Image 1 (cartoon, one colour):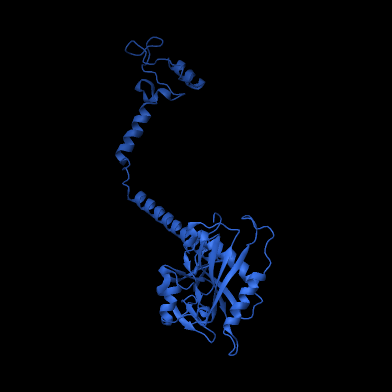
Image 2 (spheres, one colour; image 1 turned 180 degrees about the vertical axis):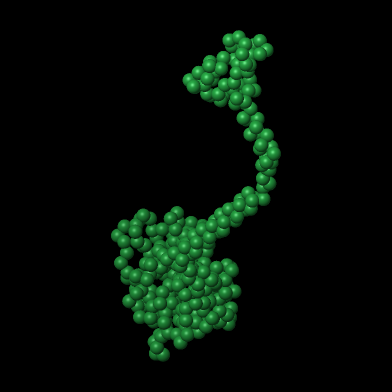
Length: 338
């Protein structure tokens, strides 16, 4: 209908995807009156001939609400069922369901009463097609004691059940009538206990739909398991943290083992260390002279001879600014000897 689905008889759900949980056939077994009425302020369309079409269902619902309001004070009234629609403007063939009558009551008299009540009902002053109510005239009424029961109860349930769901219904007799029930019907043998869930009849059979509770997750084919969302979150967090910790420990252990297994470069031998130390010491003496950096020590070769010369005619001492002056006592003794 643009904003919602108008479901066929004995269908349910926001998209008419479920079968009705229970079908009440009690009215089919009791007395009823078949009536005909002509609605003058509605236009007939060909799709209204099909009982499953949206046009037929919309008109049938409007007509049923109108008749319920008119017949509600009639003794034994149990509702109506629109059987068919035809042209002119809209001719309605419908059935009025009644409760069983007392032994001395006349069903024919009850049919005449229903006809009179329908024609005496108040109707809208404006009988245009846009009027809110229906303008109609009841034309006939025929009484019938009971619906024919040529079929047994199981076949009767399957005939009234939706086509794709009929195998899931079975008859259940009560003190006052007949019900076609499923495993989703409460308080009957074989009914499902869905705990806090909701039982719905699907194309695959009765199923429990678990609720989304604020603090729990429901699971199981009967919604019998409830898992705390807080506990589940903590468990997942602890499990993830423990996994990361284990991986970190493994990485540390692997790194340590690899570091310990790496070969070390051998250090220099003692002989090589001695040679290196000697070479470093030689580099500290200019021109390779070991005693050139010793301050306050000098040596003069030669005895007698000219000043500043040795016995071989030359002086073996080369004065250097890096050599300190000799002590005064040493100079004095040298001069006396000379």
